[in-house]
Length: 383
Ligand SMILES: Nc1ncnc2c1ncn2[C@@H]1O[C@H](COP(=O)(O)OP(=O)(O)OP(=O)(O)O)[C@@H](O)[C@H]1O
Ligand SMILES: [Mg+2]
Image (cartoon, rainbow, N blue to C red; front, side):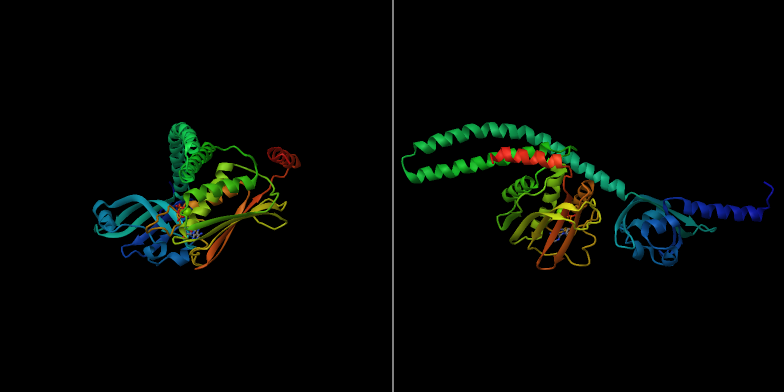
């Protein structure tokens, strides 16, 4: 090196500053009173706060770190801390970071500041928990298809015997009792079949779907699983256009939205599922040909306060921390699935009156596929 000491020192600083901004990580230095002293580009990108806004601020106030009490003790005992944190960005979004902190001491050995390097792992975390959820579903599916088969085997002779006994009863009252028994058993059988077909469909295949069938089938599942205090209505236009998609995933969309509606109506209420064809409505995230299926899901529940309505589709956003607990992934999954289908979802709500979700899905565009469904439909209904 031919440069003198001073120059190389400055070069070093410049290189370090450049490095600070080059990394994707948020690099922050704070003093022992939590005041921010250094805030790099990565931090600006991750949290949305510019350096000018962040410098001098209290880091806890700015990011709402999910730090546990006692953490400061750990840091000063060990001189460093590694862990995962949940934080909040400038526009109120939740982010998860892997955080590494290091205590910096002055020449006399006294702690003077804390170096922080945070890596954004939000995406990774959401994918992980989605995977976990799918894995749980698959395990459940395997377990369930095993016992469902046995259950059906048990039910068939029961049903047969009931029918025989029903006919043998001399008096009308006993016959009515047997009829009630038989009808319930038949319902149980249908439920098992429905659950089975629901679970079997956990795959990526895309098929031509008649929305009316999908909605009615889902409503039937809801009617047999939701409390009786919730009335479930469907109002479907005739001749709904078919859509192309993954039936299991789309059913998951309907179920997630309806389960939220159920949670919003703990006492009682009405859940309405409507569907119609819409033409030419400009929907930014959908395909531009403008032909969509519109599904409206309306509840008469608690409603969503204005302050949080922009956040409900975020991963891990939940208000269910009391008797009912939520993961905050329901609507996130919904928006992911709809994005996969080039669809979109909107919400409108009034506190104390209820909520409506509007789901748009582009319809199958090929005339041939339309014809295929029509023909299948005509054959099924002999019309
Ligand atoms: N129909 C609704 N009425 C009132 N609030 C709703 C409704 N749908 C959603 N929300 C609000 O949106 C939040 C996020 O919903 P989301 O389905 O993503 O998560 P969750 O229901 O809390 O948990 P999870 O679905 O993962 O069990 C809910 O916690 C709730 O506050
Ligand atoms: Mg939910």
